[in-house]
Image (cartoon, rainbow, N blue to C red):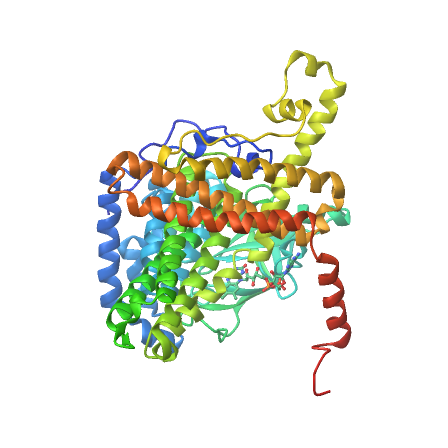
Amino acid sequence: MSTVKEETKPETTVEVESFLKTLFQGHIAEDLVFPFPEIPKDVKETVEAFAGAYTEFDAANLDSDKMDKEHFFPREAVKAMGELGVMGMTIPEEYGGSAFSSAAYCRMTEVIAPLDASASIVVGAHLSIGCKPLVLFGNEEQKKKWLPDLASGKLVAAFCLTEPEAGSDAGSLKMTAVYDPATNEYVLNGTKQWISNGAFARFFSVFARIPSDTAEKEKHKEISCFAVIANEDGALPGLSRGPEEKKLGLCASSTCQIIFENCRVPAANLIGEKGHGFKIALETLNTGRTSLGAGSVGGSKMMIKLAVDHATQRKQFKTRIADFEMIRHKITRMTATTYVLESMVYLTAGLVDRHIGDYSLEGACCKVFGTEVLWQNINDGLQIAGGNGFMNEYPYGRALRDSRINMIFEGTNEILRLLIALSGMKELGDSLKEVQSALKSPLAQRGILTEYAHKRLKGVITHDKLTKVHPSLAPEADQVGRYAGIFANACETILRKHGKKVVDKEYQQERIADVLIDLYAQVATLSRVTASLAKKGEEKAAGEIEIARWFCAHARHRMVANLKALEKNRDDACTSISDRVYEAGGYPYDLWA
Ligand SMILES: Cc1cc2nc3c(=O)[nH]c(=O)nc-3n(C[C@H](O)[C@H](O)[C@H](O)COP(=O)(O)OP(=O)(O)OC[C@H]3O[C@@H](n4cnc5c(N)ncnc54)[C@H](O)[C@@H]3O)c2cc1C
């Protein structure tokens, strides 16, 4: 298979701050998001050819309905996916992979997910999370030893973090790895829960605690990452696999417990530094999230096609239902949100491919916005289909079942909203400390301060402007600049009011995250439409301009509501209403009681 490497890969990593983290300080780092990343023609052709080959493979080898009903993913299909090159897409070339750029991988995920969501889990659990600790943190010897077999699919990977008692709070995991100096091995004990590819994986990235007398709040520093490799027959002394879980969706994919009972692993299988396991797990998940957004783009495009086919053929009241305004509204919403999501995903993939230092918040935005947009789009598609939408012979029910997990795994959308709000606030808090110390410091007089500190010393943050947006979208560009400034001031007010206690203020964190997601969505859209205008001219880009205006108008309403509620809200009532319900153990106001 031909390679789809990052053609524009620079010699060194670009040392630039995160676009979204600096937005918390009212600064719009426009150079990071303009121009919208262009995919070179030859890369496009190669990826599309590979996508075509995969589509043919899917048609010939994956009977999606049968697999879903039988709750089984044929093992020979996994092998064939390896032979096709799918299992090595993002693995570096020197280890037998194809070194796909992030954009190319996102495109493939976009194609694979709607064809069969379980297949996309096989690939995602293998590439996005299973092999990733080795690719990102493994040493040369480890990479040479395992990556070629992972790239060919001879070894399938799984990511073992979750435990029965440690889900969102992964840092509280209990599994232990005790060093045995007599054999220079670690002895693993514990149970990993809901492990994708669990039944047939032979390479496991396992997170376990090397017990020490660390203080309670430093406990995550005990966690390390280990490569555990089962033999060719899948067996390994001390490792066993639980039965397949019976799931709501992704039924053909394998999800089971992986149980470790005195499972011995050579010390040489430690991935990265001892005690860095938690960081490795978080970094792995950060890098994988953009592709979940890409899968949601693929699913949404499929829903739009189904909705248009049905709406234009079905007549009621002697009229195509497509012509009713409430149906038009749904089609518009589906199309606009898909366009915006596609813009966010490929803007973020562009940041990854340019080796921008930190894209954790951008990836989280793609995952949260994307998985919720897909859910809404499937719901809209089903509604347009009417009663047919409810029948199992149509694809809507399956799409609902398969897509629901997206809002739960790889960081639930609640946890990602916390991540978005708190990481940004942390950065802002650090800057505020800089302002305070600058006021006391001689550096202030010498002008050695960040841009943010300068603005703060001058007074309230005014707003940066988006200067690179095409003039036909000037009001939208102005809106983003204005609200970015209001957002930064609001975050600072919250931070000054609550100090460290801001970590407990989840009502506010949710609003902050939602405003930031809306800001990023608008920036991505304006950047893309500006690029389209430059390429196609105003007439041919008219549809995209309209989508940008439609979306920005709706985003403004949401931003205004969220920003107002940061100051004035009914949060106290929310706490007391839920308290009463908890006390009653359920609904306390039954009319018939
Ligand atoms: C099909 C499937 C495949 C999976 N694959 C893998 C895999 O390959 N490897 C792996 O390691 N794990 C895997 N998981 C596990 C998955 O990542 C976890 O289910 C997820 O992290 C959530 O953990 P939990 O289910 O324990 O929910 P909990 O953490 O118990 O959360 C329950 C609810 O509480 C919310 N919540 C928790 N904490 C907070 C908070 N601080 N504020 C607000 N809300 C909060 C959550 O958002 C959620 O809505 C898989 C799960 C499934 C279902």
